[in-house]
Image (cartoon, rainbow, N blue to C red):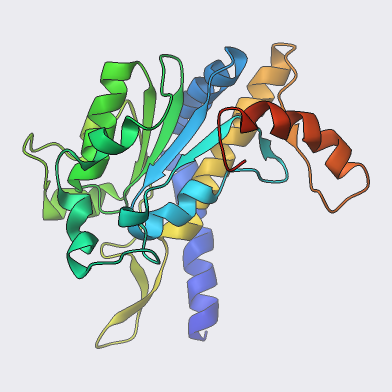
Amino acid sequence: MNKAEEYMNYASTLLQKVMSEEAENIEKAAVAVKNTMSSGGMLYTYGTGHSTMLCMEPFMRAGGFGACYPILDERLMCHTVKKPEDRFLEREVGVTAEIFKKYPLKKGDSMFIFCYGGKNATSIDACLLCKELGVTSMGISCVDQAVMVGSSHPSGLLVHEACDISLDTHGAVGDAAIDFGDFTFGPISTVIGAAIVQAVQCRAVELMLADGEKPEVLISANVPGGDEHNRPIIEKYRKIVPFA
């Protein structure tokens, strides 16, 4: 087996493990998202560094909810960091509170909080602020890594302890999954994180349909009728999400 095959097998096996061991928490998260959508709320996403890729995963996607708002701050994104010291902002308390003030978060909303290491102060702050605001927080992290490294938050809490619903990726400590002897290579967090997000949303849609509700779902703009279908949904949420 070559390393490409090994990576694919690792990801496939891990996906099955997550579905088996996180089934209860996936169901809880799906119910939370369903309740948010049913009540006219918003699904938010929040992360730093490479986790901001996952923030975009459910946003304005073909086969995704219209009511999704990624929380993005240039100081916390890999490609926009202007000062080297800003790479460590994710470890600082108070940054998230400053960012959240710019968003219309309200009771009944829900939020995916992505932090593979499960220790960063910004992510733990996000979980705690969500509790204050009545927003259901769904933390996606690698619990093994978080426990091994410990928290960078004054409370001593880790993401899986601070959030309302913990979704463990069960991935490799350090993220890189494939052993090359002197080092490991091949991060797994994005693959597993994206799969968890989509699994939760698929189940949420199923629950809505079971209750006789019609979810606002976008379709591909590259299929016949896509633009016409999406236009009223996008126009509705552009009033809230300025870059929709």
